[in-house]
Length: 102
Image (cartoon, rainbow, N blue to C red):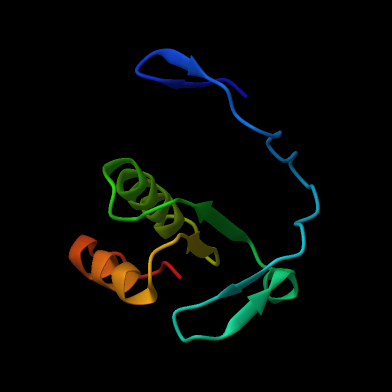
């Protein structure tokens, strides 16, 4: 995958997963404080967006873009993983009118 910033190439670490690749095992906490694991996503069409901080311009734009796309597809689960607290994510969602994001 070629990634650029302002037209300049960037080096990334690792490889993008192939379509159909198995999701690696993980644990995370949702906005209700529940622990979710890989098994909680099995059998569902899910878009997982991983960002460092939802309150930065690039992460905000990415999250808005993915949410807008997810709104067009029925029966999709949209999850954003970030370093933000659940309160910060909830505040961002309220300010941006995002309703489907977990």
